[in-house]
Amino acid sequence: MNLLSDALLLHRLSSDEQEFLVALLKWKGIDHLEWVRSSGFPSSTKEVLVWKKDASPDDVRSAHDWSREVSLIGRFDAEEKNSFVRAGATRIYDLNSFALEEFPFFKFSKPLHPEMVVLTQSSDLFSKYRSLLRACGSNAHWCKDILGLPNMLKETKPGVLVLDSESFSIRELVPKMKGLLGTPYFPLSFCLIDFNKENVYQNLATGLKDIAKAFFEPKDLLLFLRDRLALASPPKDSFFQAIDWSGSPRNIREYEFPNVPDGMLERAEAAYLYRIRRLFLWMGEGANRGTEISA
Image 1 (tube, helix red, strand yellow):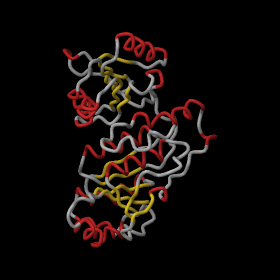
Image 2 (tube, helix red, strand yellow):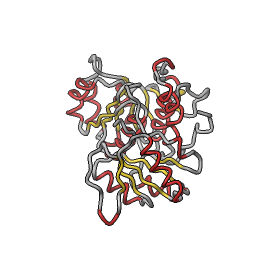
Image 3 (cartoon, helix red, strand yellow):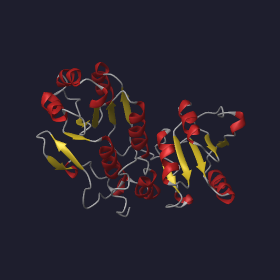
Image 4 (cartoon, one colour):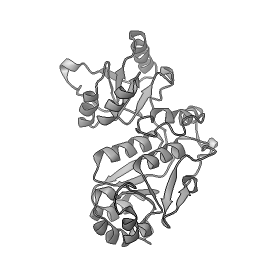
């Protein structure tokens, strides 16, 4: 079963909506099992979709402990959404805005986008990128240390490399990364950096600018990827900026991903492509930038 998520956590659904969701799962031929709190997390294969009503943020953590891909479906106010985000939620489908019957249960049947390698020591950061990439027909690989990066790049041949400069010493990162420049498997690279940190431009001058194509705040790169990977047609105007290697602002649209030709998609997948961005309202401050553009 090519499921987008193998755990669904329900929040403030009516009894009729719960019945409808279960009927929808049966109609789509999805094996499912209710998670009853008193019995603990169900022991089942990932081919079986686990669902739980009246979910709490602790349930997100429990599902992650069982290596489950989680989506939340329900109604959330701002504080509720933030509490789930803090617990590690990366897919929140808000019924205040979108119809239950439009929720996408399945992933794409074939890869649509290049894969990504994320060099970071932050499991939460990697989880967000993996969640986004998998939903949009691609995948992300986690590299936790610089020494393991060359082999991972050779094995996966990703289209994009994301470097989390906040996870490593700049003095350690730069010389080891420079040794990879020019190799045939070195992909387009973006660097995550905290622009509010002291000496940020000094760090760029130490050699980071020679490694990455552009530098982003983490939330901006997530939003950029959401828009570029999830939409068949990109927005007319970009809401995001990067800092390029020369240190000047540059419009992020310069770093486009190829559009997916319409002919490559089955009808159901084409509809999914237009709807998938609705899952990604979980990115915190600035998450709604661009969402006023119709999908």
